[in-house]
Image 1 (cartoon, one colour):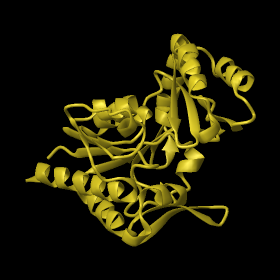
Image 2 (image 1 turned 135 degrees about the horizontal axis):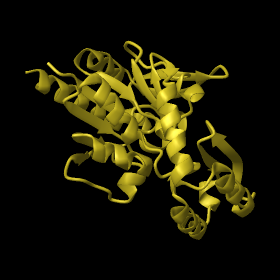
Image 3 (image 1 turned 90 degrees about the horizontal axis):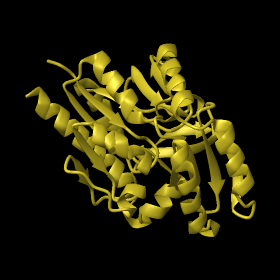
Amino acid sequence: MTPVLVASDLDRTLIYSAAALSLTMPDARAPRLLCVEVHESRPLSYMTESAAGLLTELADAAVFVPATTRTRKQYLRINLPGPAPGYAICANGGHLLVDGESDRDWHRQVTARLARECASLEEVRGHLLHSADPAWARKHRTAEDLFAYLVVERELLPGDWVKELQAWAEPRGWTVSLQGRKLYAVPRPLTKSAAVREVARRTGAALTLGAGDSLLDADLLLAVDRGWRPGHGELADAGWTSPTVAALPERGVQAGERIVREFLSAARRREQ
């Protein structure tokens, strides 16, 4: 039987920082958690123990593909339960990892398209440096020489500034997305969906499933056959929906567990 491909965002979809947990999960209902990321000797990200068990089972029923905006270095800090994924999508589709190594041909294709269709990273980064106010912009970063982001004090961030940045970026072929304390400027052709289609082609998958919480995940959710989004995040805040995407009521780490459960149920139905 042809395989089922499951492509999922990680942060605030399957795994959650301590800050995300405290915002979305009442202490009285806290489930048992498993730490899946440690950095500089500090635990950073978690999922429920139940979700961890389900994810291990999913590896036997489908091709599981993490699809993240994280850089390769940031992604490789994560130790998900179950066997190591054969494929992973990093830098929002800029790198396709095959057994932990970036596929050079894929990366070459992506960078060539960005050079043809978008303003340069240097131009966008310069605009961010010039226009962002140090009163609320705490850090300026670039990721994998592909896109830029700011770490901001969200409560101090002027809403008009974000809209002005979006208006400036759009004709230059870039998109703007605010996720937690990070404001991303990403080239429009740099998408998770393109990398997911490539993995589906390579694996011969007949059914594709996906999940995500942010505007950067919308293209992924539209590209798969069935998708799920949690009850928190940019997509939920915007009321974003699609006929093939289920909007879950669960928020926070419970949503992560529900998503893995839905993946596993759909993959097993396909086997029957």
